[in-house]
Length: 347
Image (cartoon, rainbow, N blue to C red; front, side, top):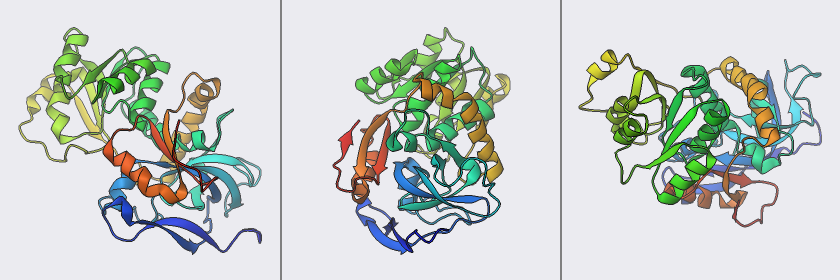
């Protein structure tokens, strides 16, 4: 590390598990990059649902990860650890966005080098910080785990979340047909504006029956689900023969009763689930490589874009968490560490 770096930094910590108001700005020692890591001076950090769960004590970091919240950042590389080639990206001074293993709610964050990507051409820190968690998650689950192919159809639950808005655009860009669920008419309209063939208001419609109607009884090839138990039976009924259900979160519970397992057997369905944070560095680096090759050109050209609902200054992280929890947002919520006095700004 260089002599010009400070010994301490500001970071967000939790004084007690539970409410957003337990979040505090605290002075902490500056982290040091280990082997295969870089130190990033954070300019912006994304807010994600796992952060809420970690604050509540429901999602502890994996062994060896930073205890701080924050799974995605954008900023400048200010130090490089051992075993990082000095003549390859990212070198010191490079502007990167990165999927972290934790620690993004801070002025400085260490990141495995393979989880760093350059800012897409024309992007600023806020836009770049909104990318890693959602794009790593969507790409790895839809295209690597589910093996989505051009011409196939996808149902995305939570279509106006950060995951949802990313998935809708990526499926369309890769030649697929996408349907989405959302909880209000305005949110349904946004889904179709982003490229969904149809959006289903889950509060007023049975999504599984609506999918059957929209697909003339066939069903969809893939479902990306963040609800879990309460949607399991409906998801199985909405899948086509040979369809794949990928569960990435459990907002609707982890244990399902009354599910007809015969439907899985007779329709040759695949049900799988993943969590990204505990996966090893090599797997995450492979996702990054594929994203840079297949997706970053689409971002640079404007063919797809992150949808940012609001930004908050670092000290107002509690307000950012409250917005995430009330579910009214459409797109990403981002912390801005460049201008601490900046008010929350719709984007």
